[in-house]
Amino acid sequence: MRVSEAMSRDVQVAASDQTLQQAATKMRDLDVGALPVGENDRLVGMITDRDIAIRAVADNKAPSTKVRDAMTRAVKFCYDDEDVDHVARNMGDQQVRRLPVVNRDKRLVGILALGDLAAQGAVRPAAQALEGICQPGGRHSQAPG
Image 1 (cartoon, rainbow, N blue to C red):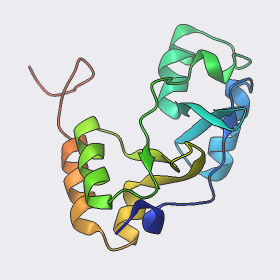
Image 2: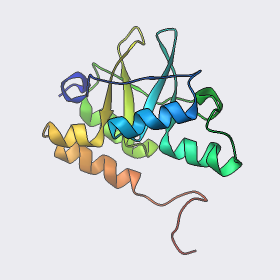
Image 3: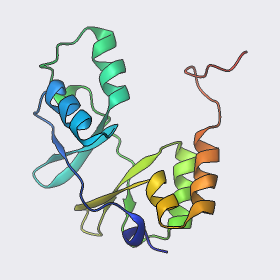
Image 4: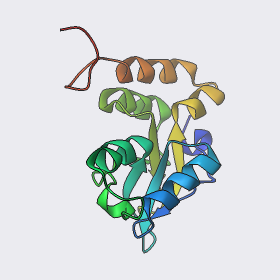
């Protein structure tokens, strides 16, 4: 199965010059935890609820702070013509639950989440990705040690 068969096509985008409050409101209204960030029809980052909590709220930044000041710039993405098994393995290795999907011109065309894989019957790749994502690691781990 190709990514284009499993991805969600109706993707809302945050602008890098929007405020964190605007982005958070959009996330709430859409019931999502992340938004791709676009500038001039190009994917330039991702803003997640965790980015807002860790890079803004925890540092006492105002709700008027621009998305560009808290977003993740090193965007991991996949192509719409890639195989979902391959992408799911990458999601597990990179420990991400969702990826923006671009075409070969690098235009945003969708987003792929673990739930999309499961909903399309790609349960095994979704389970493998989740297994990788759930591996403890880094300073953020709550595992005893």
